[in-house]
Image 1: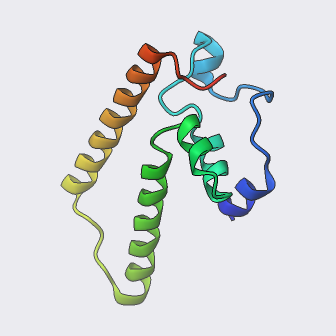
Image 2: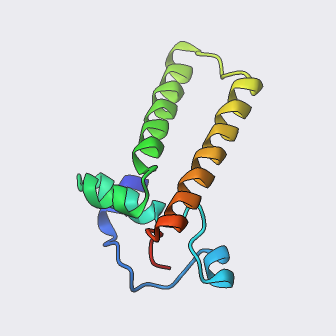
Amino acid sequence: MAVGVLLAWTPTDNGPTLCPFAAITGHACPGCGLTRAMAYLVRGDLDRAVVYHPLSLVLALGIAVWAVWLIGNRRRGWRPPSIKAVNIALIAAGVLLLGVWFTRMATGTLPPV
């Protein structure tokens, strides 16, 4: 369903800012641009997806891994990952998001808000 919504929606920089961080500070947050990037990604426009957020491909890979696990869990009874593994993955994702955000701030390549 989410893919259908992303395909039906045309990404634009002219819409309202929905991010509370960006609305308050006037600067993009670490996740700003991901929705537009994913919309371009489902259309097959990898270049524009990466321009809007360099981690869009990582997010897409994570969603694919989660979907495979979900199917395996329902059909084959795969056990969920340990809490430790989930915490490590979440911390790694946070570090990646902040690293990309600081790099984009330093280089002036944050997406428009």
